Amino acid sequence: MPYPRAEVEAAIRGLSEAFKEAERTNKWAWIADKFYREDCLYTCPYAGAMLVVANGRDQIRATHYGRDMDVGSGWAGWSFPILDWAIEGDRIISHWANRGPGRRPDGSYYETHGVSFITYGGGGMFSSQYDLFDLAHQMRLCDELDAAGLLSPKLKAEWVRPMKKRLVDMLEKGIVA
Image 1 (spheres, helix red, strand yellow):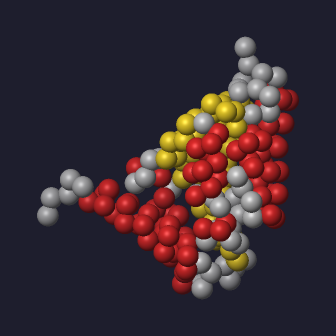
Image 2 (cartoon, rainbow, N blue to C red):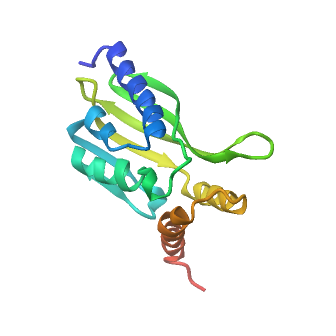
């Protein structure tokens, strides 16, 4: 039997507010402890270029909220707002953005969008999360930020270049010249 809708919505609303707090403090790891069950499964396929599967809260803290979102790794100035969500029983689909620093000359954000498929597991915590976003567009966004002088050199060296290489290597497999 599903949890009450108000309880499920309170959890995703809480996560959305936690993201705002993490952006202000530049600390993300605490989100794993507050919103993810000890046995939660987090998955992000990064477009087939790098599969991240975190089994349990400790691995979620180390990967998704550590290596992948820790602003010390070059993500300073970025935000990751949850823009909207839909709820059906214990299932949540959230729509979010990877929003880079600054704004374009026309005032729009430098951003790409993604979705998460989340299962609520009771007690204000999630039992699973599967993230999807367009990695090629994320790489293009980073190029745009770099051209505007807004991409962190550390992020470029430690995340953008290696991820582009993984993406290209994956796409080149099976191509016959």
